[in-house]
Image 1 (cartoon, rainbow, N blue to C red):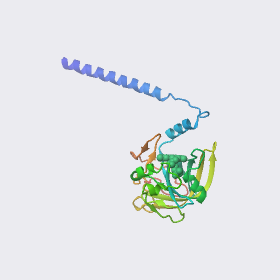
Image 2: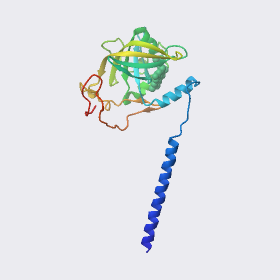
Image 3: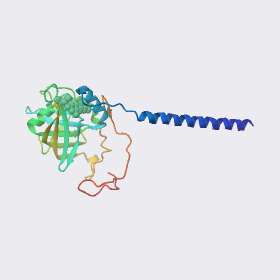
Image 4: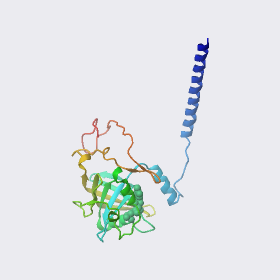
Length: 246
Ligand SMILES: Cc1cc2nc3c(=O)[nH]c(=O)nc-3n(C[C@H](O)[C@H](O)[C@H](O)COP(=O)(O)O)c2cc1C
């Protein structure tokens, strides 16, 4: 008799738990459908910046090297960046003005028409981050931080040795955005340098590359779990990749 009562009590408590779980889920779903509306018009620069860098995540980091007319090599990270074309391959990066003056990277790109985008990985995170420090134009971040450089082949700007991929770029066009505080520099990639352990001559092993990503605020992200899905479309201009591991 006691056993039967115990079983009944257990079944009842399971029912209650499942009901409360359903209730929790119901509340959660209701909350998930509540949104805070923010109209962009009227936001000041700081508010707009906070929203956009918090929402557009994770962002790849372009660790850009440039060379000034004074011969000094400049290095700085930029995460308002992505690839924008494949025919020919092109990248774009937004470099904001600093107190109405061009940042060293932007000035050097405009003066020489050349830059190198170095992929930032986990191993180089600290050096990459440190290179965001505001150094005067007559100071080279690569000298101060002891960043080892390698010469490029098609541009005069050197590349960063510890980066797993370096892309030599020539400026294609400069697009002034909005009020002019932000300028988009679109560059054509004229050469890739791919470290042997991450490139087999056909595909880039982007997982092995361990790229670092920028999140909102002071946060970076390392790669987490990788999820595989079959490719549903052919890559532009070619065969391959459908039902093959990228
Ligand atoms: C991870 C990271 C991403 C950044 N992204 C950008 C960006 O997209 N655009 C920008 O103007 N500044 C960006 N900055 C700030 C520049 O790196 C910083 O202003 C730097 O001092 C510019 O150096 P320079 O004057 O030598 O070009 C970023 C900084 C960090 C740490």
